[in-house]
Length: 103
Image 1 (cartoon, rainbow, N blue to C red):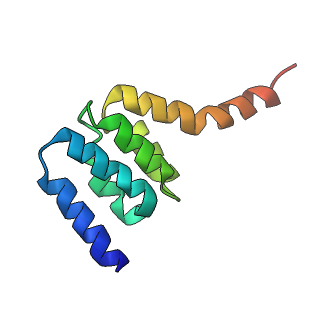
Image 2 (cartoon, rainbow, N blue to C red; image 1 turned 60 degrees about the vertical axis):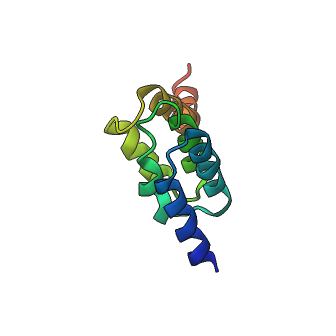
Image 3 (cartoon, one colour; image 1 turned 90 degrees about the horizontal axis):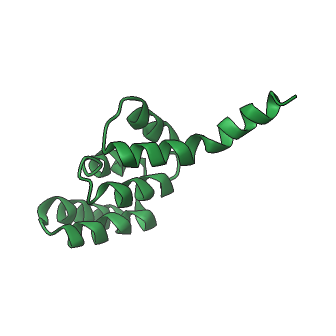
């Protein structure tokens, strides 16, 4: 049933034009999304009304770190949202590097 549900949600997301409905459908991917859905969701990173919800959803999907890093490095999406994702994803690493070099 998972495959049928995931396909129906993906199709609904692609077909609806209403942004509120898109936001709702995108947020549902937090509950069932996996790496197979990342490219579909990434299509909405360019729309500033949908980008933040989309990025938060992508970030909730296990094993999405490399995908997010590639989007950030290649500036593929709304710049404000990408900057936020970069901060959230890389903040622990940057903090650790800084702590390692403190005198």
